[in-house]
Length: 267
Image: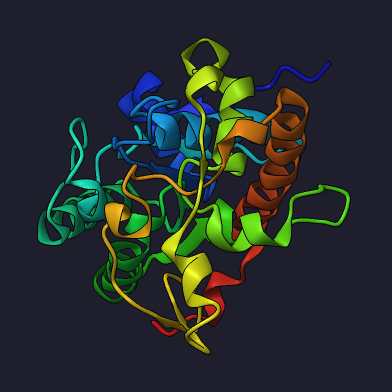
């Protein structure tokens, strides 16, 4: 059994960090959230999923590829969940400033390749802005990976309705949490939560919570309980299949970032 783990930035000495920079190592910044996930999941669901996927990635990487994992940005932009107690959120301006400062420090240490590994949908906008800022200001190659945007294979049987509408605290997140933190999942309180998006499918042609024409929403706009999806159907077996699938995608993102011909970028 492959028990490799990724190298944590904070475990290294200054000299060791410099050595990894000279080897042109990839640096990974996990991005997550501390926010409400309904009555059945803990506030750190996104963080646990993001770090769990990174744990699962390590054995999938080539042995000569040794990326460094920065301390996670656990609190970022969760504005859409601020109506619910327990949610911690930075303003977009503050979160963007934090990303810029972290990226600047990574560049100053001599690194050129960064993966933003995101496990919270609300972070996508600041990631887009920060990645371009870091490319322009520091010449970094910044790749943006969102596990939840990876299409699911046919071997993972999740209803189309759930794929479209179970975007927060639903079947997918609950199933993975049953593997990653089973003692914190309260399945007796897991709902089958209907989404406003399902109702709109019959009345609007393209407009919805996500997709090509989307509207801005607060979590309780979609469902008063703040979650949507069939969390009550989550099983550990499904959770493990999802973790394996999403870890493979993240591994490809890291290996592709390492192999990218950075000399092709404009100086």
